[in-house]
Length: 221
Image 1 (cartoon, rainbow, N blue to C red):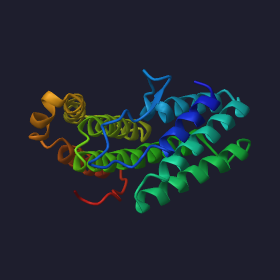
Image 2 (cartoon, rainbow, N blue to C red; image 1 turned 90 degrees about the horizontal axis):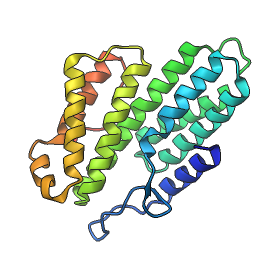
Image 3 (cartoon, rainbow, N blue to C red; image 1 turned 90 degrees about the vertical axis):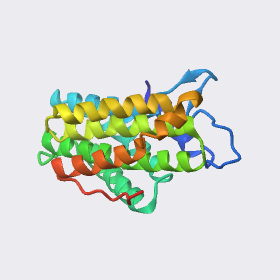
Image 4 (cartoon, one colour; image 1 turned 180 degrees about the vertical axis):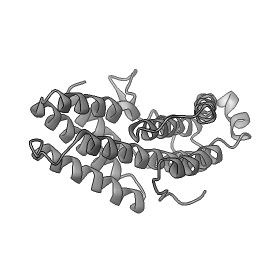
């Protein structure tokens, strides 16, 4: 996906209407009507590309992808609650600084790994909050999509922290993905909610926060 396309996706995210009980359960992001964009995977692909380019000393490419990632995070911050928004903007600012200083010998791949882990960690909390909002407004499909995004970012936060995913954590992540899929099916949503998927996601979030030593800024709920 080109830089222009990713900025377009971010702009679409920023202009998504606030969810309400009167709104239909609209797709979160679409392009050309039926073409879905896996919006939550945009930073993941960029982060991998940035690290690879950095190792190969392709600093121009790394800089461009850092700019795109920073824009994505900054726009998502506009939808986030204040505590998460402030931290997302901090990460975005740091990405912009590295983008402008890729030749700084003080910037290492370890710095990138930690920064990307933090970005995923904050996005996981942001999307869990969005899943809660969707649940409260009875937008089950969106709740499932946001829960899927939460799960994705939780997993990536651990991986970028250079920690191993335990068998129990892997099982918990797979269970959340299954629940997220069920929430998107109106015939299965009520049954999925009986398993308290968002509570499970929060418990896993707090457990992983201790594992990778990252604070949880999202309030309980």
